[in-house]
Image (tube, rainbow, N blue to C red):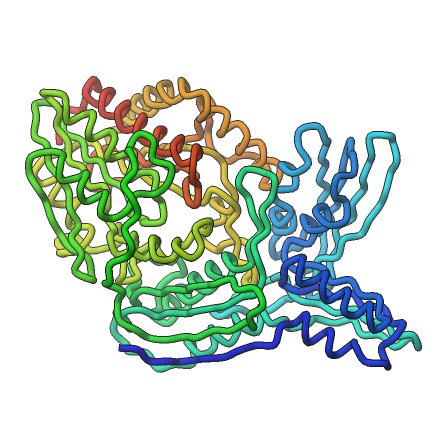
Length: 589
């Protein structure tokens, strides 16, 4: 089944501008534009216009302050930087967050000072006022434009978003200073409009897969800090996915961010192809059930990348004694293994959000160690969302360094945590695990983006996920039922004490928390031994205690991935051990 809703190609903005201002009437004019494109393409457009006698400067509409430091300041030796940034009433910290990871790029040797400047939200060329103090005492002042437009989005909420802009002055003094709807913005708008203008069923499950295949000619830019990069392709994936999810939530009369919505699987596939024209094909198609190429297995303790589906399935078969099963929408099995024993039972789960990959390895490693002990008592469910994981592997084959939040939820489009009790799908594996083991502790392994997460065309900051927009280290969340607060705090403190003995983890946390505070302000979590944490009462959860890990693991590879699953493994074993020693309330699980 395949139905095409839209197939459209767009003229690149850099090409259109060269054509418009490359004629003899524009000679000796001055052109300054902001577009969503990479440095190589922008420089080529400048050179082409220079051949026609036009002085042109093509700037980035996305993260303009960061690009200013990359492209204009470069390796200039600096002692201090002062940045006065716009602080609009609609989103006071937006422009500060958009400057991430400037603090990390400058390094600890440069004093960075931020000063907010109150402004009204409007369609205009805002500006960062930048003062550079060199190591020899020289002071330079620069105004760095940041064009934005004020607009209503797809769910009729007011947004202030980065946009294209053109500033032209001819030899005769004729001027043009106004927003420019770039190819990047046109593509997003066309894709959204065709979906929003289509007829959809009233009941849930509107489609199997809504696929948006996008081609962009711009390449990602790697930054010299913490695995960060600037990626217009990744930003478009995130904006298309969450904007469409919000649209279907809105149509269903649900609150934005409601995780029970079941439209189907929304899949933006954003390809980067040099020399191609920007294009989008929007189709309705069947769920992807074909097998993917199987990469070689890797030793679990040294795994430097996410495991193949095949290796996960092989590893889990070797654990425990009893198999528990449910299934996904596509028919893939959700498998857990139960190991009965005389200890208090613990449920270990991973990949609820399938683009969070380190927990899978950590869970398998910890379960293999526990399985060797005579009294061990646990259930391991390392791949709770197999449809999402299959999509993650499929998308990562094209864009391995992107977050791919389209793989976060199930093929229904919902978060498995939001599935109703008593169903036969992904959430059922937890219910069956607790029914057979009476587990009182659930170690629920999660991750989050290891680099900045943005939505460039709908307000920049990911709506509903504001606290996750930049990494802030490995942290823990303990949820507990009423009457279990003392046990929750004791368990948390004991686990954190053990994790504090991992020096690489502590160093990661200190580095990321410092960068977070430089761009997002004061840290809003409690911290113990460099490990941030939250304690939350939740009487609706299936177990009296739930320990949730949050590791910045999306998109990490190599040694960074190895550290990620080592932290997950260490957390499981520590929690299992200390849970056995807790003095529990009389109403035992």
